[in-house]
Length: 298
DNA sequence: GGTCGACCCTCTTATTTAAT
DNA sequence: ATTAAATAAGAGGGTCGACC
Image (cartoon, rainbow, N blue to C red; front, side, top):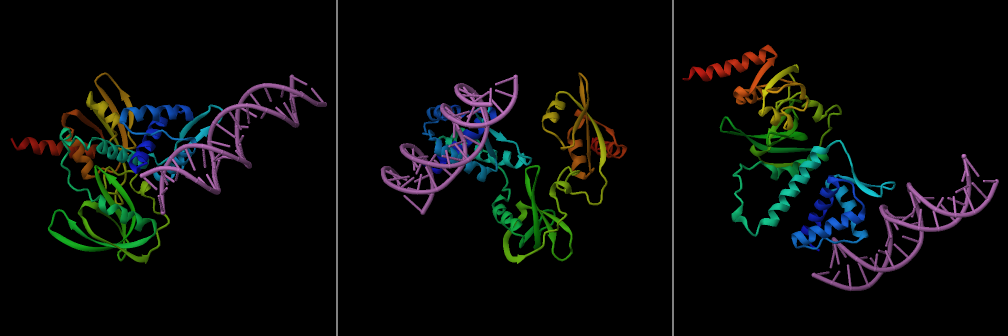
């Protein structure tokens, strides 16, 4: 039994249970069906299934439980589902690629810049064990490399980029670094004390992107999106505080509370005429200024 | 050396049966 | 009719041998 088969089996089981609760029989049926479809043998015994459940729990952090009254297995919901979804997504992609590597000419990969994810393992290890790290960092607007010596606290993803949130050992300030501009990562043996009040979710609660607003106050924003773009925004939220206030035939009114940072303004501007800012005035002026400057070019 | 299935016993929960 | 006990069904989990 190859690792690949096992991993794929895990995904099949998880996806099956994502769809609906199922008894062991039903899961076995699904695995049999997938075996035929994919040309592998996913059929397993009850004992192996149990071991799979344990493995899925430890690998993905998804706990699968059994409900006696309904005679069904189900996924127990946990709060940090984003992380799990991401992991599963990664495994899905991985599996999809594995499946199709016999016919690569049918897939046109997006040429992506390296995302610096190769440093993730090391950083995660350092974060978990409170170990100081050093690395060289390339600022992207100037051609300058500097060696940084910091205490890593958390990883954060924002708009397809990964960042590490750190505490500057000397200045005692929070600093964020993009993983794709970070190299020569070294993990030291020096332990540091993790600030007890640090909570990455709390820190970025009102942030649009990676800029955490230590010097800002969050503002209530009201946006009117035209349909059909509004539907897109509804399904792919701009910010997690986003709520639908009102919906009409032509548009949807969204409210959200966040720091109005440059990247957020840029996002609104890039939506062009599909969105109208209703609140606050500062954002309205800012967006108007951008569009006016663009108009002045012609 | 790790994975899987067979076997076996225990544990949990639901349902049925018996006793009050 | 209510409660307690027996039974059934299926998970939980340890061990061992077969197989890569």
